[in-house]
Image (cartoon, rainbow, N blue to C red; front, side):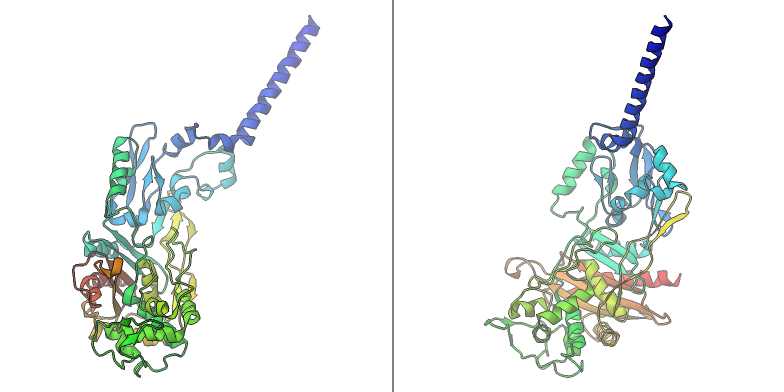
Length: 488
């Protein structure tokens, strides 16, 4: 009898050991595979079991969480959703995340190990900490000014603080309410289908994900290249461009919308936007010189993150001279995001030094303790400081005496550049109206803001000054808001 009991005890012990080994195998060896198995709903349930952390603007949350009473308990909510959608993106129980909701998801969802005072203990226990908060660089008054300025028209605005790279506004229009996508069910899938089916593409972030031909605003880049390369040594001397200007290797005449471009100087060409002068200078600089220049501003950079990925702005690396001439005035295959053109303006305002643009200032625990901070850092040396100083004067003249007069602000020095970009088959489409600018209060030591505005569906004429008519007033409102913010 004792022998049988002993055998039974040993057998039970072996069963216990096997059970422990199997539990360890499941809990440790196979845990990641089981957790990622689509049939396992526990991670999804746990993800939405607690309120999500918030995204902050000016210290106040523009997001929230709602108890739905469902299995996936907490749904994302948005305050002024359409206003901040190009910043926050969406956090959907059905369609995942985008923009800041995506790049900072580990913090907002509470899975970031840094949220725990003892990160290693968190990994062992698999406890989910309360979601942390993401503090953005956006200024509410600047964002609102840009949103009101576009007033539902297709287009975008990007505003940067030149001295730091902080993004003060990022607006895309028309916009949408990301709260419509937060939960599950037919209402969410219907909203997704409807939003994606609209011709106006409200879910497209035009500020960082859409590229446009920059038109005459790109002439600032070409002017910087000409001055840095020594092709132009005196901005007030005739630039030597013939008028009419025949595109090299063709019989095509390049027209000017402005008068007086024959024998014009670089200063006059920037002030009144002479196509012939700037195209001629681009050819004289040469493809290699232009590529060096555009690279300094960030064109062709496929690694730019703010932290969301930014579509690369394009300047072709292999072109004939006639194509180079057109590219040098922001046409042919040259394209840019509004953020990129704000960076061009910021480089001029920043004495040639371009800071890396960023949207997230810091991330914090739910109690407000900072766990990561994102400060200013250099990006590129876009041009020589002396070149930037000359371009500052030329851009100021555009506003004070040229095509950008609608951007003038009392009590501030404002530099700007208008632009009209042709598009469509045979350039039959309504031109895009552009305006890039920067502003510095008279008493301030440095510029407060650099802005780029593009309006797709402008109804004005096709002349270069349409940028001054449609886009410059929006830029002026944005700059005014930024100047007021910088004083507070």
